[in-house]
Structures are given as structure tokens and as C-alpha cells.
Image 1 (cartoon, rainbow, N blue to C red):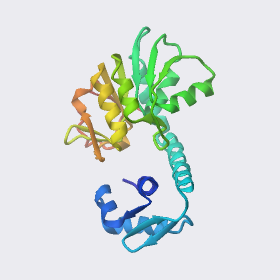
Image 2: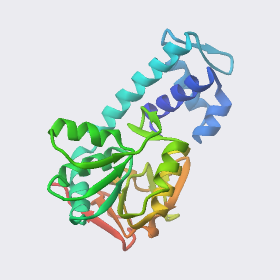
Image 3: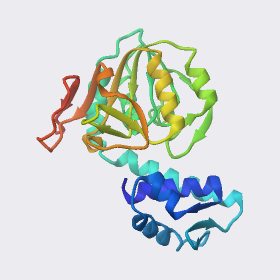
Length: 261
């Protein structure tokens, strides 16, 4: 996990708890105490955070805590949208070609999935999604689509709705096709990962209610792990990914790799 991702995680835990410890955070992030200590020291330069022995605490009111976290999370989300943008669009276009008129589809959370909407505009389909980035994009394009937004708690860092309400809602459907994103793909263990329990639980329930499931990921996510196991890579009908620069990767047979011009 890179420094900016650790920062978002730490700020999120601070917002939830008000105080966090050095050793516990290192264990949760699966990294060294020395690395987290540097993160803590960097964050302690902010006026609203105080460095204490063995941890961090927030100095401001809960209102300011949440706004601080939300502002950082929203900024990180915008940065992720711009990251590997060309790769995401190539992958999204290939995946969208599988959608047929009349399909009832699920679009997952994440920036890779949000890119797919540009290539579905001429399809006569119905979409169910928790992805707020998709609604933002439709508003930008000033188009109309048959979309059902899943309710639930707003997760700023994911740009989506999550939680028990979302899961209960998704369990009522059966989809022709579903398109998923993920946080990491570990080829050695045949596993796709997500970065949080709420979003991962929603993915699993949507996956279980789908006839054909597809995974979209840019090659930067390959040979990595994260906190929460989503499902085995082999369970997807296809995995769409841009062609990795590392020729040593041995990709499973369900991978469809795409060149980025």
C-alpha cells in the first residue's frame, strides 16, 4: 500500500475512533512500525492531529474530524479517477461490448467500473449500481439511462453506497451480467481482493446473484494483496486487463488482455 493510501486509511480510523495506536495500525496495514511511525509524524504536522506516545489523536470536534476525512477522501478519489485513465477506458470498452440490448446488469463500485458507462449509452439496458461516479458521469453527459441506485450509507472514499441497506437491496435481484472492480489481484493464490468489509460484502452478494460475472482491472493491480478476500479469479467468466509491461506474468486462461495505444 502506497503512502497516500495509508494516509486515507489512517484518517478514516481516526475519524471513527478519535485515537489510534502505532502498533495496532501497523498490524492492520500489514506493514512495519517504522513505516507507520513516519506516516504518523507526517500527519501530526496538521493542526487537527496531535502526536502522542504510541499513537495519534484528533484535537478538533467530531464535525471537523468528519469534514477533514471527507475532504481528503474526496481528493484521493479524484486522483484515482485520473490514475491509469487510458488503461481503464480500454478495459471498459472491451467489457461493454459484451452487453446486449435487454440485459439487466450490475455495475460495481470503483473508478474502473465508472468508465464503462461511456460505452453503454446506445444500449437498451437496465442498470443497478451503488456507484455514485456513474451518476456523476451521466449528469456530465446529459443523457438518460435506466438506472436504479442502490441505497445505503455514503462512502466518500469509494464514491458509492455501502452497508446493510445496500446488501439487503442487492439480494432482491438476479442479474444477466455483472461487472466488478477490485483493489488487488494475487495471481499466485488465484484471489481478487477489496480494501474494506462493507464494499467487499456488497460485491459478494451481487456476485452470488449474477449469471455471468466479469472483473475489470488495470495491470497496476496485479500480483498484489489487500485486506479482504473478494473471490477467486477463476470464478469470473472473463477478467479484462490491459497488457502488463512485465512479460513474466503468467495470466490465467480467462484473462483478456488489451493493448493501450
